[in-house]
Length: 353
Ligand SMILES: Nc1ncnc2c1ncn2[C@@H]1O[C@H](COP(=O)(O)OP(=O)(O)O)[C@@H](O)[C@H]1O
Ligand SMILES: [Mg+2]
Image 1 (cartoon, rainbow, N blue to C red):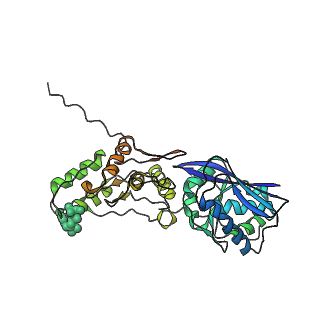
Image 2: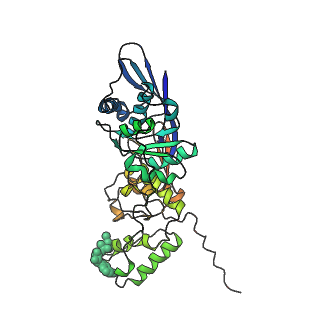
Image 3: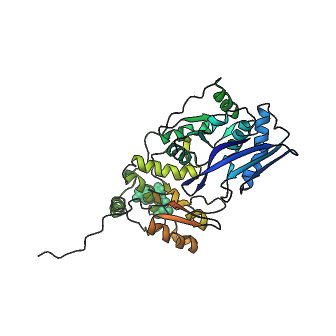
């Protein structure tokens, strides 16, 4: 018998369906995971085995094959632990396979069966909702997932509570959508003494969505002025909050497990590498320019930045997207700094008369 559990893989902020298929057949006892797993996914074997042990369940002495379909898509990250664990439980007859198939699952298992937070829960929840499925995720991230709207969410602290929920002995309460802090707080312009011209320039940049280059001697208040720029911008609307939170969810940077109303302000150190600025690296994570999406990217000590890093910003600043090319895929993240995508073009000056 083959048990199937739905999970997801991420490509930029795009979410792709991954089918976790578990088969137990007769033969020499073995436990293999196929379907282009990376190291974290391959290691999930040991975590899942231990987590089942914590439920006092041993893997049957059979030939167990876990296939992550589609087989040609690279599977990265620890969030496949939970769907693999649920697939095994369904194949062993502990969980009803048809009911589990109505959910999309993601989460990392600890050796004692507890569910640890993973990146990308918010985009996964939105994706599950679009496919009319429920979501099973770690309890710590229920508040984040609840933003996806009218979908059934099982935010479970551990594997045991999921088993009990499906058995009906301990029902999990649906999580409430939560915003990290009710009001966004920013440093205030009134802290700045004098500097009227600089303040005016800051206001114009905020109103028109312009880039700003500040030149001046050390201690003139450049960093201080820059930190006050996000506070001058209009509050984010619901769509903007969701867009920003999606990226921060993928980077694992949502604070307090909720969404944030705060406009991003990112000030990477001048020693930052090209992948750190525009995105990339082993898992094609969003870079600083994407984390600053709809907010402010502040390059303090601009001349000290690596030339390559500054050059790499050219394309995101122009198009509003940061594209990361990898050997197997192109991943692109939104990166709109300054936030106004299409500021009104300045009318050509026409002399009166
Ligand atoms: N116009 C100002 N009003 C109030 N404090 C100021 C002003 N300019 C500078 N400061 C003080 O000087 C410190 C250094 O300013 P900073 O913004 O770091 O300068 P810069 O980035 O231009 O080197 C600030 O933290 C602030 O305490
Ligand atoms: Mg400074």
